[in-house]
Every structure is written in structure tokens, then in C-alpha cells.
Image 1: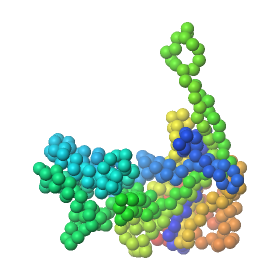
Image 2: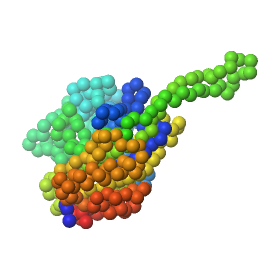
Image 3: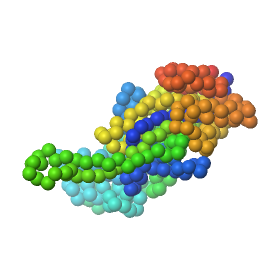
Length: 393
């Protein structure tokens, strides 16, 4: 039975008449591949919809999983603003602490909102910052300059017995300092490299297995209050791009990295660590990938679809995408796309051997090499059990 160091999740999703992910000009995102242009959905778009989904498999519904906030205004609105309520501290004092906290958290240009980049902070970090801000204000209630200096000192390198008060030390000791989202998808903090978190879930850009299919949708708006003697015609006319496509998606879960991020252990010790939370996260993630749709223009296109196929492989060797099954554009049909995937996977097995355990969920009959067919619930449970047991059956 293989060790599930990596879980590879391959999907096929079909969407008609949709605009799933737009570029800066309002058109569908695209990419060239194999000599033809494909419609694309960015990994950032996919991850945001998975992490903000609100259903029974939401990430926030997992017991013991801390939430996180991505914003340029965490210090202003979640750390300092609650201290302004009730007028317990003078504005001058709070302004001094706020400035130092923003510069420490967001970098030297963080004093102004325009100088900040959105940063992911876990709720444990936000609560820590608010506790420290309150303590500083209480200690220096009549001296704004001293409060600012104390706030600045909080983020400096720890010395002697100051470790217990240092933000870096807090992150090292806290459970999920960056929240569950940070543990899954990582974060980069340019102002504090020590706060960086390596992503444990790697997400590729989804793309159509066939050449792009798009059209410009012309639409008009009728004025309900227009009188019969007024100029006939639409009150507004416009157009937007609509696309249709069968998308291949690919996600890799680095199981040692996930356990390390969740439990605070070294990645090399993942098999001796508690893996229950990691297993639950994987179970939820499988459901989210299969059933949560990205999409712009929700009200006018209803772009909701569940996966037609999901293949999960568990193994210990380096992952490899099956995207090359579609380097030659396939017909835009699920059975044709499934056949191309199976043929390519079979070829890889002949060259490199079949060393992964595989399970597949498919709406249509399929014959994926070495894969037993399961329901979505059973597939998610199988992936979770592989993480929990440290081996894949």
C-alpha cells in the first residue's frame, strides 16, 4: 500500500454560457496550449471560491480550524477600531499605536492604505495584536509618543527575556497563526519573511480540453416607465462575452506539508503527528473542488456545475499533471475527454509504472487504469482515510 505523501486530484467540469473568470478588459481569461487558444480559470479564482464557500463542507465548518482575513485594513478595522469604541483611549494615542502596527505588519509603506498590499492574517494573530495594542494603550494612557515606541519595540527582534512578548515568538508557539487558509494555500509577507507559510495545496489554472468556444452576447434594457409617445427603443444596450467549455483541473495536496502547517511539526515527522485535522480538511476540500463553481455574472448565467469526473491518486513520488492528455485539443465531450485522460494515464503507467493508489468518481461510465469507481462521498472519505492512516489502500 503506497504512502500518501501526495494526493493528486484531477477533475473535469463542464459549463455552458458562462463567464467564469474575467481579465482586466472584462473578457474571459485565456491561454494558448498545443496550438489552440483555451478558455482559462485562474488558480486564484478557484481558491477564493473554495475558501469562501458557505455550505456543509465549508472550511470554516471544520472544528478546530481558525479563520483568517485577507485585507489591507486588518490593523485599522480589526485591531484599533474596537479600541476606539466608547472613547476609553484618546485618538492621539491610538493613532500612534496604529501607525507603528501598520508599518510593522505591512512594511515601511504601511502607514497609508495605498501603500499596503492585502495580507492574510489568521484570527489568532489578529487577537494577539489587539491584546497587545490594548495593553500598550493602558500602560501609556497619557503619553502617545511612549505608546508608539512601545508598539515599535513589540516587533523588534527578541532579546534576553523578551521572547514571550515578541510577535515572532507568538507565531512559533501559536496553533494555526495564519489560520486554516494560510495553512492550506500559504502566504507571503514581504515585510516579515519569518511569517511566510509554504502552501500545502497546489492549484493549477483550469483550462478547456478543447479550443475556446465563445460568443458576444448582445443585450438590451427596457425602461418600464417609458411612455408610448416617447422615443421607442431600448433604454440601454450592451454586450458581454459568454463562453462554454469542459475544463480540466488539477490540485496537489502535499500531505507532509499540510500536517506540518496544521500541527506545527516538522514535515519529516508527519507520520508520527496527529493527522485527524488534516484528514478532515482533505475530506472537505475534495467536496469543495467537486461542487463549488467559480463565476462572474452569477445573476445572468447561473454558472453552477458539479464535476463530471474526479480522479484522486495517492502516492509518494513527485506529482505530475495529466494536462498533456489535452495538448491536442479534444472534442468538447465528456466521454472523449475521459478517454483521452485514460489513454494518457495508461501511457504514463507503461513508461513509469503504476505506483499510486487510485479512486475515481464519474457521472458517465469510465475505465480509468487501476481506479475503483466511487461516489463523491466515498471518494472524499477514502482520501481522508489515506491521510488519517498514513497509507492508501
